[in-house]
Length: 248
Image (cartoon, rainbow, N blue to C red):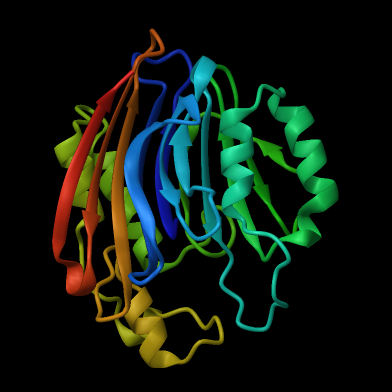
């Protein structure tokens, strides 16, 4: 994922609300949101190149999502970051035990942010931090830097999520994710990729010939543990490819 905004409200009628965009090269093969045949407790998209995923849900209220850290100077990784999400969703380790293992092995991966949750806890781990953090109730945004780093698209999407929390329907969450307006030049971050690329990546929804938003996902978790996920898939220049909805 390249942008995730979420509301964590334990004890609320809808304790977790997530709106997330996965940005990736269109040529990288992947499957849309579905129940995994080899792990039926998991509902997620799937990266066919490395076998992992970017966002999904598992048994016992498990939730996991990932964003990359944008840094063109970082060394090549030995392992795919998508396995960090997949292993949590298919496993049964407690979150703190799983994260203890990830902290020890984080140098094996390129930079990442990892969100892990269940019905009672939600954690964030930034690969360049020393320790993960259990999140307090609140409304958060995560892109390709740290948690709540004030990039224009993160601020815009987080504010838009706040505005719909009175009635967080999937259509309203997906509308947040469909904003293709780029940020003003003066507000662009400098992450070392050049101004033209910074501008392209500054919109909530990214569309170009070779790289862009591949999937937009809305997740709504109810107090009784039931979950509703809607995913829309896109191709080059933002062409709509399909939509999947699951209720579990």
